[in-house]
Image (cartoon, rainbow, N blue to C red; front, top):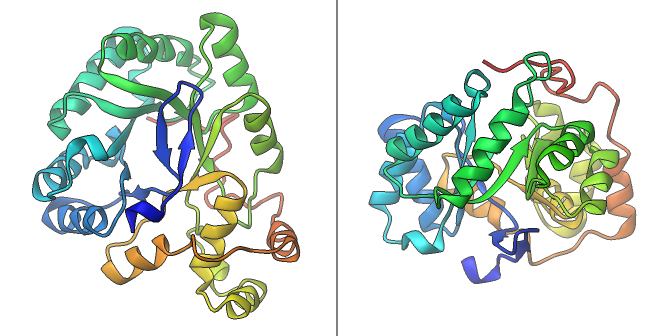
Length: 280
């Protein structure tokens, strides 16, 4: 399965798989078992965060799998309460200790927290942590273009990736276009959306029946064809395999247009607007 997963080239020269595995709310022994299962079924990009409180669970899964560390891409994220430079450096180190790792393949600032307005300090900490070998690639999550423009202006370093809420009900067309123009990879959190009406949508199911695929496979393929890296989560081995099986078919132009037209202005799941949202 892993040989069939294409890779995305980041602007720093590193590569990540075109699909990853989300771990939000996967905790303890059951969570470690689910993550181990995902790795054993072919996932190589594993996404966690300081605020998910499961970096240790991810580390335990890495011990349990027989897949070598160098074949994996482990990502985590810096929480909003640690945006000062010194706190950010310590938080990165703490994340590594929790996961029992020497380095992260990818580390992101989880939210810009524009009211707090300390994300520039946090970014400098990530830039330095990369120089020290603690991180291979650095990026952001939920950043708007103006936030990333400021990072480039002040530090000369653009993120390699921006992880944003992205699904058919909120397709982020303008944001994706800005990423493409600036050489930043797009990663999709909540790629299948948290609302059941996405997976039960008649238009999506019509496309799924046309291709002999499931609704989730159609949506994940839609992400891939938009050059976005989805990170679906599932504790079910069957669903884990299903979500990986998106590289043996293609959506045509009509399919993509129909899915794009599902987007709506209020499509965010929890109304978390990066322009005002503050993460703790």
